[in-house]
Length: 395
Ligand code: AMP
Image 1 (cartoon, rainbow, N blue to C red):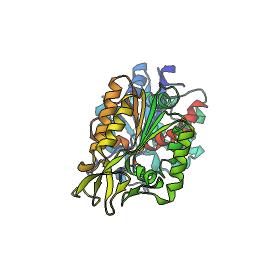
Image 2 (image 1 turned 90 degrees about the horizontal axis):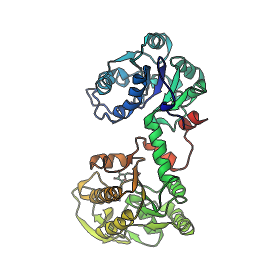
Image 3 (image 1 turned 90 degrees about the vertical axis):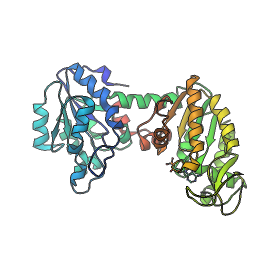
């Protein structure tokens, strides 16, 4: 795996794909700078080598050059975080970009305008990719969040740098961490899959069955498994067209000697609301009109012992509707168990979909070994897919 440590950037212009698709408020201020902070080590290494950095990113999904999607809005924030005044080019290709890139000197940073102001970016257009490529000497991909897209700046551009392309620190770390969980792991290996639906995680479940010793299935998707086995789930979220599939997954798990752990009890509510009445019920005997919205105390006790005996832990998806306070306890407790296991030496990785939101909300970011920055990209890696942005560097 080639990373920026394999290159000396002295007097070189690094063309870096970063993921600065940050959330903005109505006043166009950045409300979460995580992604900018995450790209900082890569940018600094290049500047410290004596090179310059040309940053390219998308922001949102502009349709018609709407000004609120201009990366100019975040130039100040980037300058503050990196500690260097960032220059801005009002287009990512064409004369303005070319001139700004040509004028760039060692130690300087140039931010290009939103790539997605051109449809050619998401189309993966070759000519557009070549124009981007002409701006820099070495291509660095440090954007994990878009590594699953075969877009111009994430994938196609790499072909114009046959020998001079590499991963930035962030993307390299993502690839290493997931490899550590899925392939280069210490046993016993545990995957915890929660979240709303089985249907969005089928391929993940099937892929991890070949890799893990234990599988905890929690959150909304547990109910499909319980109903498939004849349980009564009341009005809990349940995919009736996936009952056969759930049974098949359980059968596959048995054949592969994977221990599946489902919740045994739940916090049931009489409506999908923060103000609902609640009671703890066995998960396979939820009364009509009630729905399970969080894992119950016995389930958590069981999950705790599985987590604490694991040496490698992958966590994707909450155990309950954590956005509502009365149903956040299971997810918080699970985070505490993983924290304890990590302190005892386990490697723990959290990521994919919305999991990161829960981890951040409850302050577990620094307690697990690694939090992945890419939602969709992480899910695709967990599905065992080759990501185009990663393959483009490796090939
Ligand atoms: P995902 O993006 O698939 O990881 O799903 C995350 C969502 O699943 C969160 O918004 C949770 O509120 C939701 N969720 C978790 N448990 C349940 C449940 N028992 N019933 C309904 N939704 C749930």
